[in-house]
Image 1 (cartoon, rainbow, N blue to C red):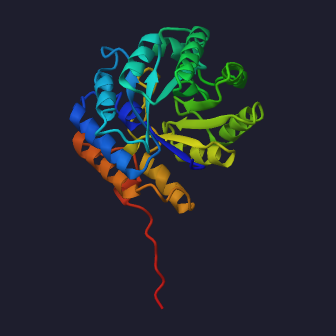
Image 2 (cartoon, one colour):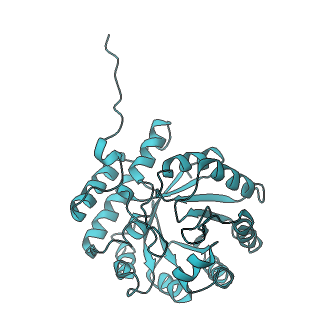
Length: 306
């Protein structure tokens, strides 16, 4: 296993706020190219009510496609987001490799997103996570709005820590902090992840940053410095939660990979392929997207001439 894991969430978080529906075949082609780039985990979609999030109506179909023997690739993990028991059942039926699920530390965001309070959602999510683990599935749980909320503002640190402790009490150790509203700043990131690491030496930490106020990539680096191993991002910087106050894009996958490449890390991932997907997404949506490197290209390697 690589010491740094790239979790591409573009097909889910990247597309869910887009009003123009991306055809199923186009999604499949984009995911195929992401797989061929060497990215570790790809979040294919979410198992939600298609009336609330129409872009995700074909999630089951796409998972079934990639689980056909002729399309299956054991080098990549295909993840799916679930919010409730029905979503989990759908995910089990169509072959999800890794179930992602979370609870918002903000009651307001939780009710907007799931119709439940934080405490109600936490009990349900832990039960679903245990069911997934008992079925030998990989599981990642998250604390959403961990660094702040567009509705409530600053989230008390103890609320985040209490949720993490309940995950750990349930023997769930693959835990992500999600900056749903994009309020995180680097010193806050280092401080909170550092405290969580002290709770359990076997914990596997992941992060999910939105770039609402321009801190996305700096927060990624802060998380990396303190020992976070899994990084969620979206090609071209697409995305955002439709149930928060300001829906803003994710850290762009190509920007993330480019940064790690220049640090001498994850050079096995084909950056050019990710850049090409981002260009195709920009052409599809007929607008410039938030990512940087798909527009500028990577910093050139200068070869010294004698």
